[in-house]
Length: 502
Ligand code: MN
Image 1 (tube, rainbow, N blue to C red):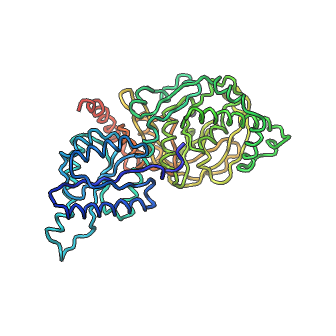
Image 2 (cartoon, helix red, strand yellow):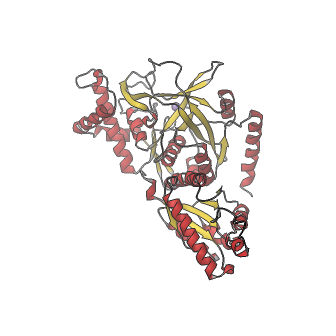
Image 3 (cartoon, protein in one colour):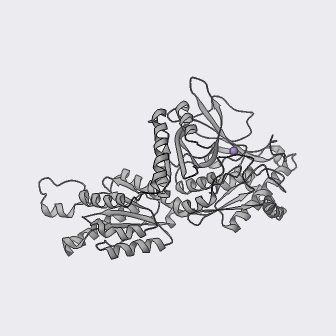
């Protein structure tokens, strides 16, 4: 499980050529090293930035791309054209590059020295046209990449670079990653399904199914002393009602929840899984639907999707990687119910049990209540509220011929009044631009009821991630107009159909 993005690195790669002579190239190398060091020091940059010597030949470019492909901790390249680097030299390298790259369109010198500028200055500071030459070949090769423009010393340039690096880190973690599915899809739910082989080809992770009995067997191996130790942790971290304390009427339910958590955790750790799904249709051998266990595993960084939803499980996993070290949590979420009052329509997001306490404000309550569906014993769950602030919902659908990422920023707001009878964690938000347009566009785009919800990740992270993944990205925000959005959907259908042949 990835816990620290500083264990990953991105390579800072500079393009030039031999036209300028040795003295100039020495200067280019020096300048480039300085930018790489500044990025590496920046608090906006989540990974290590590794300087690579300036590239001046097709052979050197191909070699560095091949080296990057095979470097285990390299998540991608930040490319910069200090001077004019003829892009024909880049064709072989970029064609072979299997890691993502972004184009930093900057110039070492920030200002034009108006009173002293001469041709030597002009020849040393040529990113304006060098970057365009490089841009052409990226577009000519139809490679999706992020272009960040501005002076490298500014917070905004470093922030945008950092956002892309977080997306690249999540992508890196997906490659060869594994999702465990306890049970299959549920009933006849459509949007949670998809082509797992297409996903493995497109995204790099695999999805493996397990009978719930396999999990139940592991749960039954958990010892009483392990359960005892885990409950000590619960009592330290959460508000535990007296009925769930030792000797209380709900104590056995809590012990069962701890048993499920231990069993599930060891199953996932042993199998090297980073995300998982459950289903309440098939709980053979489990006494409760896993609620508390799922919540606590999510808080530790696991992706999760309910009802067999492996796409959302993988998405939550990726969003948790993007969010590492940032303020604000990330959770599996569902648009559950609406407040359609004309003075302020909003959404209440929740799930039956499985909301991640990383988004909780204050100490969560550990409660045991009956569950109307599933036909099992009363499950334990953490109940909490979420503090106000900006958030985002994202959804990933299999459209048959492609995957679609749908993203909608929102503002988390307080509930209008306390919710004393609601026994699950909940979030109330107003989607951008408003519920009428947001829900309308979401429905037209075929957006799922399950989402990855985050108060750390932004739409920009998800856009960068979608581009790296090579999938469709749709944004519903303050600029969305339904009639234009409908056209975007139609045009995208055509584009993604034709793009296979371009
Ligand atoms: Mn659900």
